[in-house]
Length: 175
Length: 162
Image (cartoon, each protein chain N blue to C red):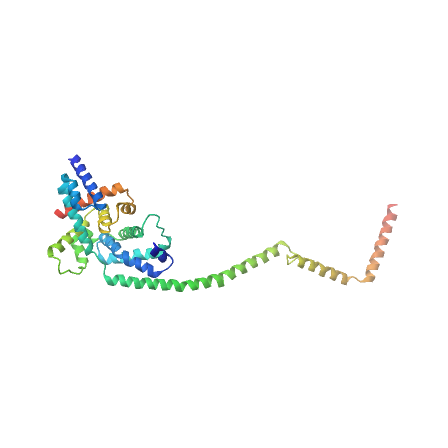
């Protein structure tokens, strides 16, 4: 909270720390939603620029900064999809062409890489809500309460949704 | 079928709740022997998601470049502020004072055609000036003549009324 207060008072160093701390989780969320690394980086930058401009208006009131950032990210992705036409996400082959390979870990087996690619592909074939809940709960590791606030649903609905999403994901991976 | 699905779903929901609370998958599997297969698959999927998460990373240079960009934005903002203050206090404020003064002058002019100034001392001053001018203009001989004329006129009026 002290970091947020300093950022609100114009301390750029404090905001840079916030950025470094939260950039990766926000990037991951955006990447899963837009399926393209370059676009994800650009959108994440937009999210933080908007946060930088609006941080003076941020009041915690039971909602931590990360949840606030995810709300901005969610809105940014929705705006992005409104502007874009149907993306290559409908065609998984096209998706893999656009994604640069991440650094190869020599200890990784070929099977591991294939499995992770399969998980990404499966995620992109879930419904929007299912993808969102998996993204927020298991990738971003937010609580049910935070996920519910961001998605505008009840915690009970989130519990049910995540259960069905995991099942749908599993079914797709089996194919 | 639906009852079984509902029952399985309830087990999965409860299991996820316990998992969120910090219980290990092994502990949860022991609690729900009926749902071992479904629960096993669910935890395997969660592990795959965690592994996938580690693979999704931004480029390091991008992060560094953005921080530099952030510092540039901050510098521009700080530079703009002194200009804003200058505009506010050395141009806008004096202009506002001048506008108020002009408005007062215009109001005073429109309310009284004879006097230009509304302040009381000025009014007295003007009256005094006028009286002085009037006094200076009067010739003493003329005053005497006028007095005599007015007396004669009074006598005529009295005689006419008799």
